[in-house]
Image 1 (cartoon, rainbow, N blue to C red):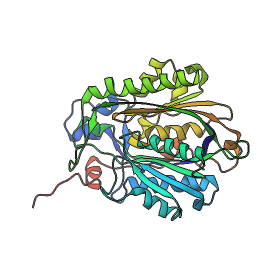
Image 2 (spheres, rainbow, N blue to C red; image 1 turned 90 degrees about the horizontal axis):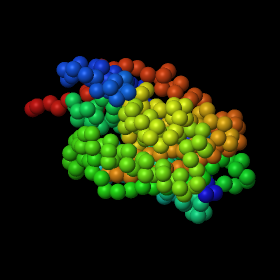
Image 3 (cartoon, helix red, strand yellow; image 1 turned 180 degrees about the vertical axis):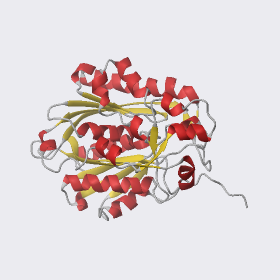
Length: 354
């Protein structure tokens, strides 16, 4: 394809909850989070939600791009934890970054891969010439029923990617989006029915035949489509429902431990749902050098995976094209611990009887 990434942004809330504290609160003999490779997770404060996360990530992406936000022709926000059931988050983001009114905007849903679906839509629209710039965002807050195993790993965060068609010999791009491939089936491993407050999941069924089948299917599909192998990539990023699944699937597909390490952000902030693989990509772009190859693959319960191949361009070395602070430095510096009680209070999980 002839499109790529102009800039990127991210946001991770500063509040953290230790999984050990969750285990103590529910008298669990075992810290499920630590067993899954997660020791703490990022959670929103009382005044934060997936929309405020998305705004912060979008602002960072626009600032690093150096463009006039009025040139953005499309904004798509992927989320499964929208603050409004009927009211788009994308319009709020558009207004917050001064991109209105001449653009198209919409919210997308496909569990954890809604953000990468947004990337594909922006790629197609930019490639066709319908828009000059498209902003794809994946953003979610922690959703989990109190005491459920999911509560140990479900964190919050957002990532934004500004996409455009190559013009001027890739000088404006930091990475070319070479190709994409999707693998989709109807596999009900995770769901939340209308009016239900918390999602349900099928336990171990979420691994196989859900996560592993779809990630492997998408990656093998893009290998065949592009004639590539794991050895052709310097970095690989997978959706991270926990700290173990991405490293396991990397080995199953033949990738080295080193290639997956930089993008593995789950142990630090938990599973960020729609932003998981996109924040991992941001972490890789923080350190990637021109000419290096990246493979990214998302996963969305329901189920589907989107795989992408990227080539890092010389534009990434331009001053200001990367955020002022790397993802991993920001995650480790900008944090404040809260108790489990503080967490459930902030997220309105405590119900009062009248």
